[in-house]
Image (spheres, rainbow, N blue to C red):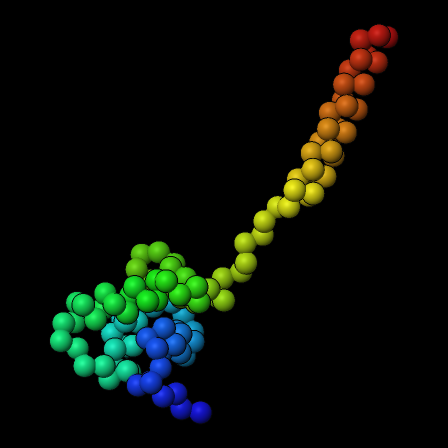
Length: 111
């Protein structure tokens, strides 16, 4: 199925390009490919690059990888966040170890 780039948003075209490439791209290369595929008339190339870059930057499907490289958010594993319950459980374990250490130290002092 061929994508209708002319009637697609810049973000959809950028998503298509990155999916097809399968790896991160330098933002200017990505934006220029989007402009080329959309066959969008451009009066000012810098304004067109800025506009497309802004749209990509605001779309959660895209992830800035650093050093001008953009990829897809779905390529990155989700962040593992510690829940309050698991933090509490970890604290309980270390508190238990600390209590045992204190008990052993107290026993050795009493002997």
